[in-house]
Image 1 (cartoon, rainbow, N blue to C red):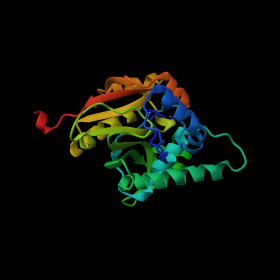
Image 2: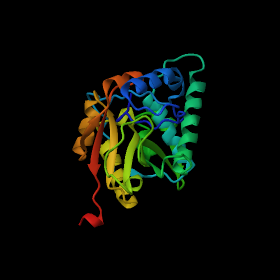
Image 3: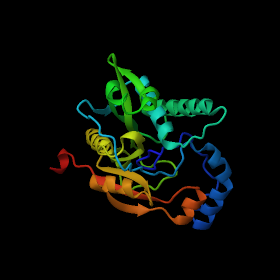
Image 4: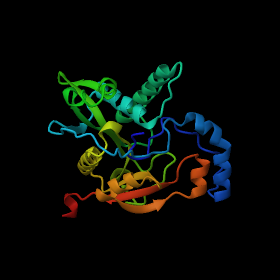
Length: 277
């Protein structure tokens, strides 16, 4: 798999339980009641593993572009890369139809989030790393054909992607504690759906995506940026910590078991702005 982090944004929101109690016992009960439907409705595989090929492909980044998506064609390419990255597919009858279904579902959800139509999200931006088609053709025919899109008349290939989400919290994830009080919904943001094409790991594309996301967050007035990472995903944790993130909290083991996923840690970084100077 080619996942850099393990924080995919769920496509479907679950209904709120009727009970108002927040005790661990009641939460365990609510989670166990809904676990079957949640497994059916969850979109991405929640486990994430950063592959480290012994001999990484040398990538010419002279024409690398890292920017916010501005077209549906690019959003579709991002959806294709995410399905390609977050799933391990076995060859079987109908698998291509299943892939197309997953891509279409993520594409529609991504368009909805970016358009500001998803409740609970103040703003969402899809940030992508792209290269000219000619730079990728000799590396992977599959990547070139699957994640190709057209931008200003040029054929490019989407090789990395993430979402920047301006919101108080992501569904079913640990909630950041900073900032507190009035304005938290404006000044807090999360990274999610971070992935880099497996063939191009260890070329610094993850760092490029994170650096761009911090620039966009600063433009939005974000002061506190978060990302969720699986506890055992050491390569991803090193990536974020080298980018300035620090530990804030971690998910209880029992909650991760009931959510049927690896336990997460929540990492945080402060985004300086002109008011801090």
